[in-house]
Length: 332
Image 1 (cartoon, helix red, strand yellow):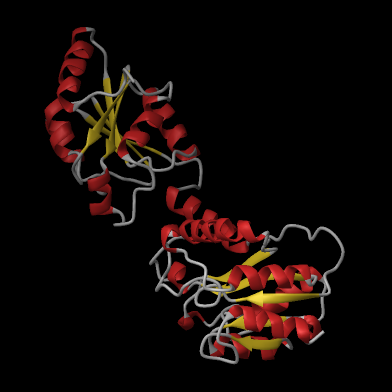
Image 2 (cartoon, helix red, strand yellow):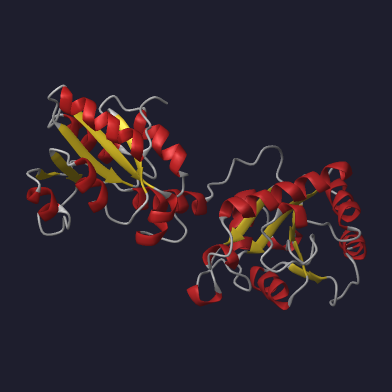
């Protein structure tokens, strides 16, 4: 995009503005997720000057002053979005924690920041005034920030509102732990390429499905809460599992998960029965017709607390999943 310039190209751009007696405004920021606050203050900035230059923080610089897990969007993506605004005349990169070097290099007429700043928090204001420029702040009109947007997205994702149950009420649910029961147990599994069905799982699930049971996964995923992997990566592993089950004609009706760690004291992390109770209420089934298949004591305890029949595989009652499935069907 023609508006996106290297720092060296900005030298020529500034010289051109000076030749045309145009007042230059300069501002900088991460602009990680462009929101109403950004758009409003950039429009206000452009109203103070004849040409507005925006320096977008590089990925490296953001990791230094914000968060090692940020930015969400790459520097090139963020520069392209900012350059798309009519209020912005030129965009360049700021590969430093502070803009002081760029301000002294280009000496814009206005150094502009949006937010609840005064002269004191603007550490570069004194240097701007020293060369004859002005440091200006624009009040925030929108109570919004990238961090709040991210928090809201995470909150909405964790709410996981259920889709309506289609069809007749099932005769029962077979609850399924995921890691170590359906998939080979991999510590903090986040790479879909590592998803591997355990022996007999596809065949056993197909038999249970033909027997009239809904198949519902209930899984503890504290790796999300601990920051080892994201909800998106968790979903990618689930998608890989669905692909592995496709040849068997198996459909998982729903996945309920707990992203919390043991220290959070929630009601959804097994051995608490919260996930099972929620699923039974949403599917409209009673616990007497439900089974919980897992590989650990926490699965059995959650089943007992919810009033379901616990079924342990691996080191438990059954050596493999096929045997467990056959036992459930025989209990009819």
